Length: 343
Image (cartoon, rainbow, N blue to C red):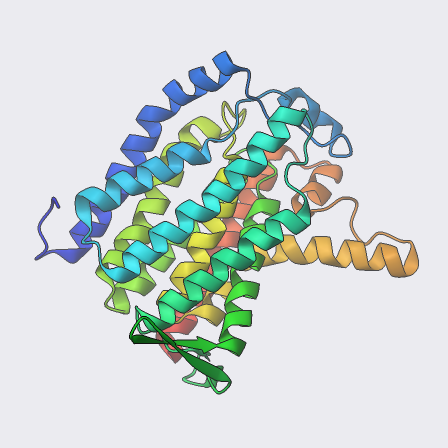
């Protein structure tokens, strides 16, 4: 562990810097490796035509993002049970995304694992995460709302004896954690459609989540959130338009799971949905589009996820990305303000 524990905010900023430096420095080597192996992104045939030029751009940059996060946490943080849990869940979900990326590249198509395969993986990950969070990390199986209100989802729980210990299964909270983790993972994945979009939005949200975790007296979780923000900075150096590398599902699914794990461990499940409001809007746009088309045969948006709608309106890719960063920052600031003023 490096840095001075007497200055906890310094520890967080140090983690941000280390993650950014490691990610930015290793990415060129990874890009050359992916090009040498012929590993490139497969572009949706039904997406914007201007994106076809991105076909073959190296992908799976999420691997290096995770390396940067691990390096920063390993050097700066103390490995508390909560930090170990958050890191493991992020890595395992990233591994699920890696399988999806490998499947996509191997078959030369934009689709990788089937939705049911992804869902099974997310169910297993979220269930394991919830059980460890409740039984090992002491997370209360309840949802806390801004203003001090809470909803106890532990009222329907079962306790099982396991090897001399007791394991509590809060069934309702288990379902909620799955919906939160699956929803945020897929929402970040849907956002990852333009150069720099998902990375920039995640960077902004994680900076605010680091401040929330710090106020929650979870310094090591704050360091984890800060390291993700820093890794996104290092990634953006190579992912800004025109991108030299994409994060792939390896990165997007992992980042969504990291946000969900931070929300649970800091008891900001509702606030995190406000802070990550841009991701929620991206997911909702797809749901609205699909529902409208199935019920009425009409589309609400020109194309979804919603960032493609603005592209179809004639906005340049950079304009969409920067404006979405601003919107992401506004959502994050709103959630952060609610947490402090009403928490």
